[in-house]
Length: 171
Image 1: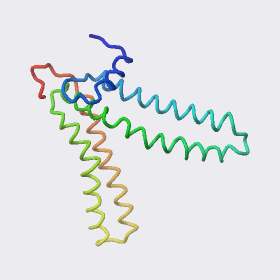
Image 2 (image 1 turned 90 degrees about the vertical axis):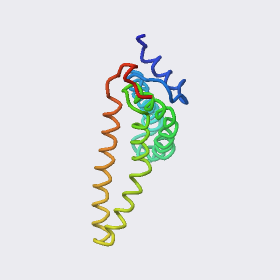
Image 3 (image 1 turned 120 degrees about the horizontal axis):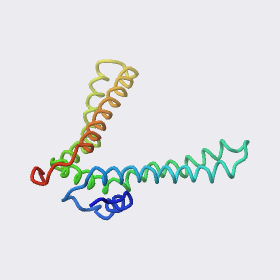
Image 4 (image 1 turned 180 degrees about the vertical axis):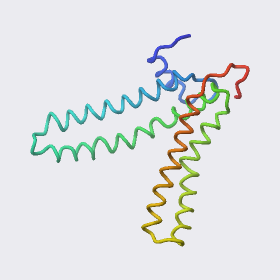
């Protein structure tokens, strides 16, 4: 059953609320990459239509601000919200395909979105007692970037795991 990229992409949307079953690497990455391409295409098209074709050289800076405020900010805020539920269900099914529990994906995602900010807030409060606010902010930025990057890389590694046979699968 060799599906095309288009079929893999639409299967991701059709199975938005399906958390049982399996999703291959091709299905997972087709969905993720196609959504990124679509969002970037919308951004580039709107930028071309609003800034490049409408504004002359003297008003281009103002039109760039209008584009950023009315197109890029809403697009960059709404796209992750729209893709969250299908992405989570797809990730959970991807973990099933890799022979792991779906909580591997959900747990890392919850860690990155909920638990990590709480831990960082606690560390920041302790650092404010030990050092001045400027140094605490700088150190917290570095710690936050490192921990978020590690969580993202681990999630990426989990999603790239090869398919396990159905008998080895842990649902």
